[in-house]
Structures are given as C-alpha cells and as structure tokens.
Length: 431
Image (cartoon, rainbow, N blue to C red; front, side, top):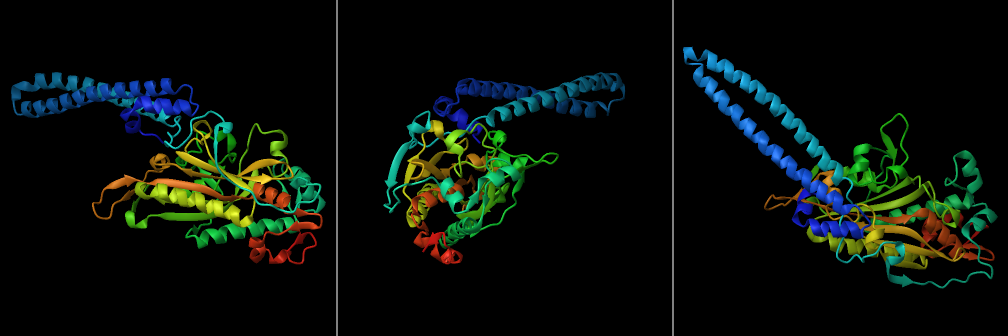
C-alpha cells in the first residue's frame, strides 16, 4: 500500500493521481490522514515529556531514599508519579487510536500510477497499443461458442446451474479434454520460459488476501467460507505472491518467477446480459498465473518481457488479439501499470479479455512486508512485484471454439497437437 512517506513527500501529486483514478474524496482522505499524523506527533511529544518526567522523578526518589527526613517528599512525589502514569497510559491509548486511524485511511487508498498510464475515467479511455488479426476460414454462418458447445456436447451450462448455480459450467467429453490440453500448453510454455511451477492451496486467510490487495477492496467479490476465516482464491496471484510474505530475500535470490494453475472463484456481483452468457463471465474458472519478484532496477524491463511472453502465447494460438494499456480510471486497486490482452470472438463479434499483466511497484511489497538485501552493501530495499494471466481459460476457449469452427467440426490449433493427442480420433475436432 501507499506509505506515509510517499504521501508526505508530495501530497498534492498523490491527491491528483488518486482523483484521476476515480477516488472522488481523495483530497478529504489525504488531508484527514495528514491531520491525524500531526496530532499523533503532538501526542507522542507529550508522551515523551511524561516519560522524561517519570525518569526524573525516579532519580529524585532514589536520591531522597538516602535522606531519612525526606519521607513526606517521597510520598508526595509518588502520588505525582501515579498521576503521570495514568496520563501516560491515556496518551498511549490515544496514540494507538491515531495509529489505527492512519492505517484505516491508508488501506482505502489505491496505488498511484506510472507516468506512461493515460488519464481517463472509463474503459473507452484505454489505449489500444497493438492489434494482430489472423485470417481463418469460417463457415457462412458463424455461431457463438455456447451454440457450438451444445451442438457437440462439449460444455453443459444448464446442468452446472442445477448442480451449483449460474456461472459454474460442466465441461464434457472433448470439451474437458481441450480444456486440459490448454492448461498443459500454458504450463509447459511457462516452464520453458524459466517459471517454476507451484501447486497452491485454494483457500487463504484474511491476512493473505489483504497482502496482495484483494481485501478490503474486493471483499464483495470473494467467496468467504462460513464459520471459518478463509476465502476461496479469486486468482492464484494471492497465494503465489504470499509465498514470500514477511521475508527479507537475498539479492542473489532475485528474480523470482513462478507459475501456477488453479481454479479461481469470483462472485462477479452486478453482471448481466450477453456479457455473462456462456463462458464470458464465470464464478468458477481455470487460470494459469505467472508472478515475478524483482529489484526496482530490473522490474520494468522484466515487465516488458512478461507482456511479450503473454503476447506470444496468443500468437502461437493464432487468435486475433489486441493489447490495451489501461487508463488511470480503469486500473485495478493495486496496479501501478496494466496491459490487458483481449481476443476476438467472431461468433459474438466482440472482444473478450483473457489476461491482465500488471506492475505493482512497491504497493504489494509494503503489505507483504517483503524486502531484499543487497549482497555487497547489505542495505534493505522494497521489492517490486508483477503478475499476469497466462492465460485465463474460459474466454480463450470461447474465442478458440468460435475462431476455429468449420462446417465439419472444430479445427485444433497446431500448437496444441502435442497436448491434444487424445482428440486425434475425435469426430468433433479436426487435426
């Protein structure tokens, strides 16, 4: 999260950026924060005076104890000490209250953003920085993936609704096999590119979700386990990044590059219409996530490489895609800079987001209490954290089914053939 020193260094700039991110009460929050900090400092000064008085009184009593006739003075001073200790306790409680007040405001503040981020309020203010179109031989009548899934019995949305509710599809037959092939492809590609695979818990506690910024900002989007202090993960980023909470890493340990496949769970409250039909928006979905931890000197170059890595996955799948730089008002709560990747779904004639690649600067590191120590000078610094979807499965599957549909069935992208050997005898898919 933002630190007091960041805010105190240039409060006007912080206020401006928070307002550009859509925090309309940013000025009120920051000024309230600075006032609490000032009041807390005054209370601490007062506490220091009381502590000094108590030390001086203790010295005086020690001296008077040697004088037999000073008993009355000692009793009087002890009464004064008793009053000072009550005042001392009161000051400590007030200081603790101010410290909590500071913390309560800090957790409400999103990250500031990079100078390359365009200023804007809504998604239409984002900047498309790259597009790549792939030409495929589509049938005369191009249909959306939910019709394809029903026709070939690949995904059953209705039975998932009966079992759980809307947003919980059941993958069947070749649909389940294709899903597994995509997961294996994404994991294998990540490992080839230097990512270490990790298998993670799907439940996390409150502190873990707080450390990566999901709480308190996205509490309404997370599933909480009743009668237990656990949350179902909305993304593998949460447990993956928290592998290093409350750590001081050695510089030689960096960079850290991890990949994980997990199911993800999101309530996605307030969604409706065609945007949620089929695989467009789910409450449970599969995703392969990459996380990197770097020194500040290396992180931005690593960010470029991470973006290029996600881009080449879509290139290999030959799905029409575009790369989008998010504007200030569309950034996630913790993000310093984010690039989204969207694939085109010709059956729906719409773009579907399949990845967000984000740089968090030191925002998550402060919550994680994660630093690294220089090998030579032994100075400690905050790390930079980065993460990206590589990739989220549902919309990739939607785009793939719609892009590769033919009159005779579904063509399998050539890059998936090593992972889709079980589909070679399929009457639905074509090699």
